[in-house]
Image (cartoon, rainbow, N blue to C red; front, top):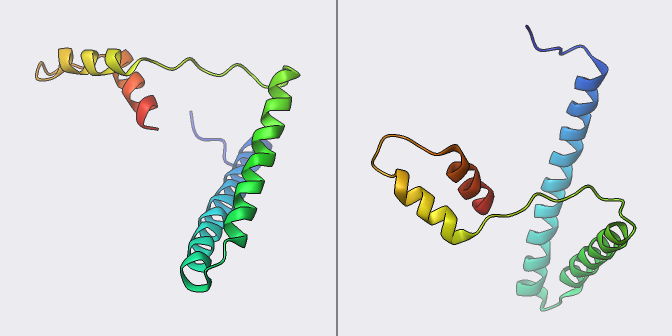
Length: 108
């Protein structure tokens, strides 16, 4: 079974990945510009704009959550359980899939 490269779903996924990459790059650029503005011009206008945008997004997410328009979020795991399961499999040559998923979700 090959990868279906010439499908509409693949093209849509590639477009979404490109938009996400652009947004991530743009956000990092804006953050660098905000820090540069703080250090060189002693002004915080760009930083205030970034904080305002994050408040708008948080507000929109809260409204969407209250209207039950968001899918359920995955449950987190306790940090103690994560460390304990990692210690129990360390040095044995085996790994618990649950502990790996738990720890990787903690650091992601």
